Length: 480
Ligand code: NAD
Image (cartoon, rainbow, N blue to C red):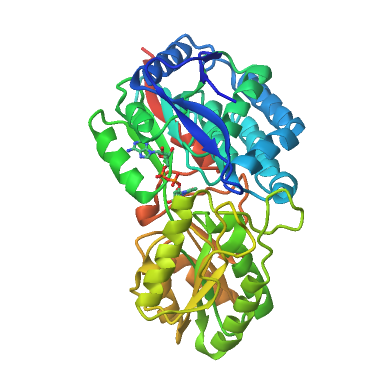
């Protein structure tokens, strides 16, 4: 099937753009084509969003009106969850049962309901007599036309994390899904129209990096929100500086899991192994570096190897599947390259490290455990974005913290201990945007999600995300 662009509430053809194949990563087969949008397409989308913003068809609705429509969108997504989930599973290789019953789809519905409610939270507005003879009003205004650029690992969820707060705030949007996974976002367009989001408020342009670049360069776009790699974040920030756009960057991660000697090892290793293979490890908060207090190191290694060996790798529509394929052959080769270089550097692969033999197509990789890697080795320092865990030992609380913080990233981390005081000390000192205690991976719509350091800045989810799409205006009224 050939898909079009969604601009100003209509499905339209490209002006001068190309086309891109969309592939099922579990089979390698092409399942559709989408437009590789041109700069002219981006301009059309921005103009539609601009008109929609300034005529107030969305930005001047009352918070209650916007909320009602967002709530309707959540209901529609819930009703269509299985249909969209089927396409998402086929396009992103995600296990269908996890996706529709416990994962992305129900969470996306919950996120939308949260943002529907957050649209009505006007706590940032204030008024008062702060200067003699004047009344001041602080208004929280929507930023304007927002460019939103999404990654391929959670296509629908990332679209919702971007659209939810922007729409709650009253912005209008040009959204670009990742080139590999545009289909569920395009399906969402029809639901948005059905929910009553006015034409031009959300425009969806499919395309590659050049399409993204055109969004960032466009002078009428006031803010760009990216979820993607740290390298792309740096490029976008540099480009956005030309027109001094606000940037909101949700970038890569390299999450540590710190396991103290008093931890419940069974719980810690079960949580860490699940958080390593969840979404085939293609998760910015995935458990990647396990640090275990030396007295429990051997037991933890044994338990993690057993857990990772036991992961059922399979086809996304098989209910028994715990882990599907990587998104593409390029991504699989990238993962295998990291493992090969780790081995060449002296690390040992205890399980996995290759391609499972039972598949003759698709981009499957084995859940992998690596030990004896140096703290400064690439496999410990760089984001692999695959189902690969390293395990290292530490000898003191200070060393655990030093190792945990010793990466460029700062998105998420976890600590396993029964000692509340220690848990709180570590949580305070870990330089990560999310710290779990005795767990790893769950998020909540109310909880701000975003990075420290080179994992970016700005928050997804929570009321803070809505604030990121607003700008404060001081209105001062003379009383005399
Ligand atoms: P990517 O950076 O390659 O691409 C992300 C998006 O940016 C795509 O839509 C791409 O077309 C676009 N893009 C690339 N170059 C661009 C440019 N110069 N200008 C404008 N747009 C451009 O990332 P990916 O491979 O799709 O996703 C994986 C990365 O995303 C990982 O690093 C992962 O950690 C990160 N991620 C972060 C979070 C988070 O919440 N922090 C969540 C999910 C994924």
